[in-house]
Length: 143
View (cartoon, rainbow, N blue to C red):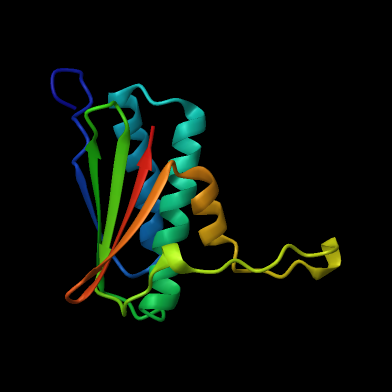
């Protein structure tokens, strides 16, 4: 702390492809949210989206191999929205083109997995994927 004030959160969070690194996301989001007067409901939505997307990259894109890089960038839009952008160097995967499974007919038919992208679509105000020369860029917008 400087002069009794909490330092501003960095606009970029750099992670390695280990699930344990996800513990760094929530406190970073909370610092950014405090700086921008973001509601608890919005913070919840941001955390769900980032944790789902990052865990998918680590588990599926990087196939659990440690020490690959991921970054999450933050910016505030002119209209007061919050924008988070994840970049990785995993094989191309267009999360926006992912087709959801049909809803289960009964609770007995619910299977683990496959709910991350539908959750991102539900909680983010906008979701955009872009291919990079060596990876992916996934951008979430929250109003």
